[in-house]
Length: 117
Image (cartoon, rainbow, N blue to C red; front, side):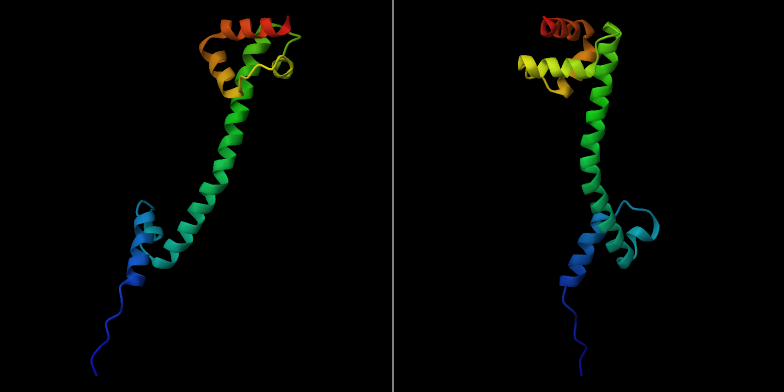
């Protein structure tokens, strides 16, 4: 009886997985079972850390805005600035405010002065 040749579907699936983990070190890119485990782990971490990254950037922006605003006066801080922005219905998000705070402090001071009045 002649030998039956296997199909290519499983090999193609494994090759796809190997391409995904080709930059991993050691057995994590060589052995099929560890490749599948590491692929699942990498995708899970990527999904989790996308939300974490958004959270971290928001914290960074808030810290930057607060640092610049507190230089202006002892009684004025980040929470009062944001409250006044919402009261005056000024549509500036935290990312833009943080960029303004870093690049041009005087502009942020002018915005805060106009809001207080």
